[in-house]
Image (cartoon, rainbow, N blue to C red; front, top):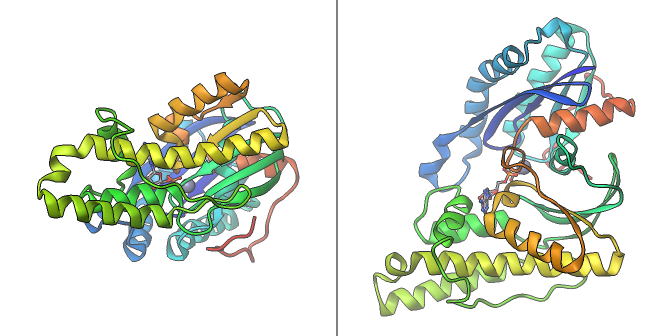
Length: 332
Ligand code: KG4
Ligand code: ZN
């Protein structure tokens, strides 16, 4: 079975080709245009998807040495995401499937982040817990099967990726700030500036308070020393990163203890964070978990994850018709 997969939920236009569960190609065009605005501008994202989708899909087919007539189905990100951005991928997938007379598979973007663990070995065994951390989501998901997942905890306000990006913006770092905080933090002391942790019930998270605490901290420090950010950037980045990662690991640890599940995975853009990867590995060794961390290329948005999710949906016969529409607030 050959599947073409398309991802266009945010600021990455991506396409991949999969054959019988194996990824043959994985093409991503990142939209640099948002950098100067300090965040994704939805209208500009839609326009860039329009411009990039044909070259990206053509390259994915060429890289895979598959011609479009050899495709059996088209998988696409149905949601969640930005409406205009999703519409580009959805409309393209529908038109192409109609033209080729092949079925469509609508994929949930966050479920695809989790299923990216089934692209390469080692693969987690069911049931496993997945800490799913991206620019728009922060969840702990209990995964009982490829298509059987349940959110057991999630953020009640901002996502952790958003917390990384917003604190980076306060430090005058360009969007997306998460990878830059990670980079500067490598030279800094994570315990230099302590920030408060907010206690949330169960396995839920909250990141809006920490953002405000960070804002006041910067205001106070720069009032005393105008060069505070430039002279202390590595320590500031390391400290904020440490606080965010502590919050994530505390809840993940609680979930592992209380469910008794010791197969632990991370997914989503923030799973590219080197400190989170290191701390999770250490925690896994200490607590006797089997830890699964995706390859960097499958952490941030990509179409290979849409392809693998589409593959498992196809095996389960979960195709959709031409009446499908982009779903910005897609239910689980
Ligand atoms: O999964 P993703 O590519 O897109 C969404 O579905 O949202 O995640 C993007 C998020 C951004 O907030 C970005 O700053 C964050 O992932 N991110 C990182 C790192 N790489 C990407 N955050 C911290 N450290 C990183 N190395
Ligand atoms: Zn994502």
